[in-house]
Image 1 (cartoon, rainbow, N blue to C red):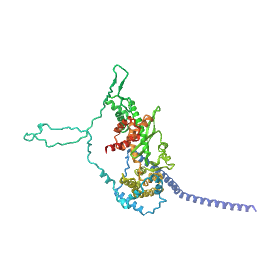
Image 2 (cartoon, rainbow, N blue to C red):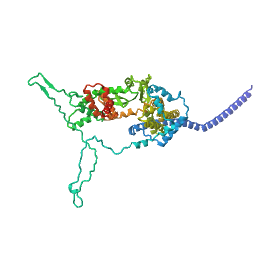
Image 3 (cartoon, rainbow, N blue to C red):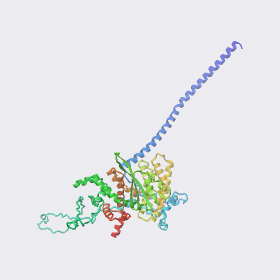
Length: 570
């Protein structure tokens, strides 16, 4: 190839390369322009996605914080009772719908949750009279709905009139008369008395202390030491001490029933001119509580014979000697048949109720505390759930702004309204009414809770309430298969009000021994309250019985003592 041809070939190749590069640059410019027009929307989409995720996260955190704040506000400022007040007419209509819906549903006993509860509770319910239960069964769903009465109607029926003073109170007359000079008519003639207006007032005089001088004549042969006769000393809780049994009983009742700490009692004694130290008063408490400890144990033995026991616990502050601080111990409470047993322990370990109920066979109602689990692992004790704990979760959700919780609360109201109607009836009758009315309500409640659990966010208070309730739903159904089981554990939880007041006034107890004494006295005083016994009079009478050497402590329990008094007056 000649030089000219080679130059021409290179020139053509260079021109082609220049054209290719120009084409590439124009395409690149077009792509840059297109990218510039699409970059902004892509960034907006990414930013929008990020913001949505942040909003969802913040919303979930806000729900959690709102739920916690509502719980705290309720504990600090709210009422102790659940404040949900549904419309009575709406409740009646809801009940009719539930019963009608239940009547139309096909029955499959092998798969329903209530059948599982029937199976679980069959040992506990075995003692019930099936024939009586069948006879007490209402004839129709309509009959069950027609027996419904609103809470407002029952509240009006309970209202009382003016207080009437008991006739057993001492009576003193105070005569308020006008002077003789004013008992004249317009002509100056004396007016005869034609009647007497009587007004009753309630008066008060502070209690008084007095010295009790005990005289013991001494008999002996004059001028001889051979024979000396004298009456034995009076027995007392504090043997050889200053106080009588009535004084010890007063100190115990003031401290554990009226929740007046010893330092306040010390001030009261000082105002009466009596110099008593707190250590002396505590020594009296020790002797009194120690004397009553066997009766406390007898209460525990009696409770373990009941087919249904309520179980709960609360905290108490106890001083650590030498540490200069307190630790949180526990009071374990057991309730059955109008008797209360309180047990002091340093911890909340589940082994304490397991030890107390080691030989028990029956039904135990409590909350969903994990420490109770060891009670039920061998299947000898049936776990019953507390409806009030479940309802409380939905009250908290309602107060945090989740208004849908009212659907569940209305159903809880129907369940509790039924319990008010059948209160005081036989277990067989209660069971029949519960099967007719409560079971359909429980079925609808379970369906609603399952739907909420499957659709709501886990951060929702309503989701947590549903999850908690469904977890123990088979335990909640136990009361619908055993007429002896109450709907909730409120009978026991109400008994904690007195120890709570004592805890508030006394702040802490001085030692573990003091905690045990407190548990003894709470057992005695609360058991007295349950059978309408005056704790002071009971203690005075029981101390006298103990001094005679009686050891049948079961017959000295407040419930047994109250039954004896009723039989004596009959």
